[in-house]
Length: 340
Image 1: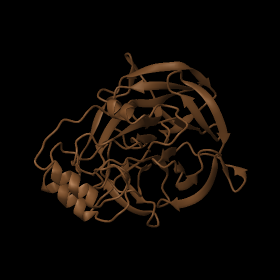
Image 2: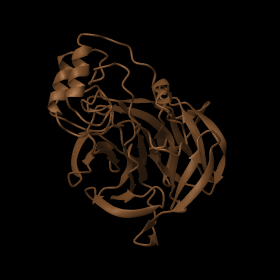
Image 3: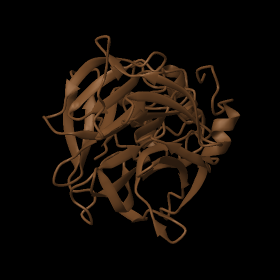
Image 4: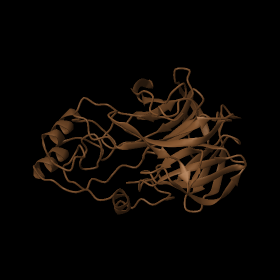
């Protein structure tokens, strides 16, 4: 199963960004049919999108990942290896990219803070970098814990935040991950239940919330607070009632949005008391840029945010598309530098 986590705050909740997930039928270790589902990161809504297909053929998919332009990718799981897919998030239909990655068993994936696609090969215990345009592996690191290679559970996933911090779940363990070396250190144990997916998503939410979902008789998802002893709160129960047991995976977008609607703290395309209340609730805090009341993008909630909101008071606006906003900030897939 895969996981997703949600952030809660005392301020009025911002509209939740969508977290995507895949769920496959139980097999050895998974099989068709598989379904694409979606949930809101504020815990308010979840639904099944549809069957995962390439053309008319059903496909078994794991290793879901969402890039800075909201393009959704996954890996088709085949007896002989794995192959990258780009998936339509509105239908579940996929298009194959590149060659078969022979012998690979990709069970977790995520885009990191440079918008590079990283993936976990459970067969070799390696952390891969994959070219999303060509579907080929460009580098591989052995995942190690305490100096020894980690035997990765097929119930696994990756997550990265906008500062480059990484996590890997394997079975019921969650580890800190150094994405440059593949070195792991223990972070937490999740209720003794297998965590098949992790993801980060920062739009309007807190800085320490890691989404997760665990394997069991149904897909349950919630969040872990990484800065508060990995405190856990469940947000969704039985996310995919169409299939109960079996593997799953989740994906959320790591890189924050540049704020194109000046003063709009809660993402509703209007500047009102709701935005002011969100700023006041986070007053004086250091937050992820462009989230939790930071409308200036400097990572702090202070008078600059109040002033910008008051200057734009009562205005409405239409936000640009995600890809356009990512491009405007100079983020490109595979960039070696951190986002500003």
